[in-house]
Image (tube, rainbow, N blue to C red; front, top):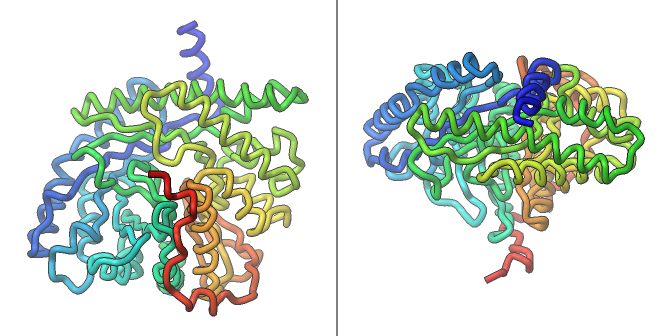
Length: 447
């Protein structure tokens, strides 16, 4: 049996595009706090370059020794708004530059945590960090930022929703591609290894290793063997496949944690697609029986997929966390791109799909003249889905400056390209301008 599992894994890697999408080291920066901003940034640089000095080397060794592709090596840090709040700097661009310098020194692909948590209100560090985002993210290549504007326990901070619509718009005016480094959350989690939303939560250990797996191609290939069989068989097939994939993620996480002498945190068992043919969540949904993703039945098929992935993965690993499910980023999924280009998938259907899968409106390109208020409305809608359903949702939207519906914006590499999608032009401006806070839903009171 063990030999068969090994052979199955080899086949999944060689033929079905299975990989470890990311090994992410989470690092706490609380011991770097200093009222002198320059001293704080030096402490941050020193801690990052010391703590993660062997991260890339260990990942490369695992890839070489076991033949398991590891696509990205990443770092997440304590939300910078908390760390920088003690200093008297007017803005936090220099902190992003320090993160960039450390990531470059270490050779990691991305570093997340230029973040703020404002679901119930702002502190001074939050305001400064958010105001710094357009400059900070446009002037760095590896730094990722996030803002959590809502939670099931707190409700939705509509002042923050309004501000983040403008921040996304401002960033797009400088460099639309930089918008892929910024995500707006509701119910953000503390152990997410995926970017752009990764940050190291306050309840985490000083250092930890989290692993994000992939595997849409593996699931699709497995479903090809059960054509025409019942939905029960489809669910069972996905569960068994997710079990195998998650086992590999746990193995890599444990090996990396031991080699780095850092605690193993979680496996995020999300199906993370790429633009490569055969590595698509949309194609899984079509294999289940849809003519195209976006057809009636899409939300139900995605709910089935998401649930079966979680059930299979949870049985395979002691510590599952992060977001865990199926990602539906438009630009990173060849099947999603095709559905948009053929007019089979629109924003409204995408929004419905986000109610039953991981994250939300992810890597969605909209016309460059989309207003800040419209972007805020999209953020509010996604936050509402997350808050009411007690799940993580997010918006990573890219206003494609100078581009119109049907044109494309290219992000390169595993991030692919996105066709510009039409947006409802009726304005939510008066709603967004009200500000205040949407109260927490009644089911949040569980004490």
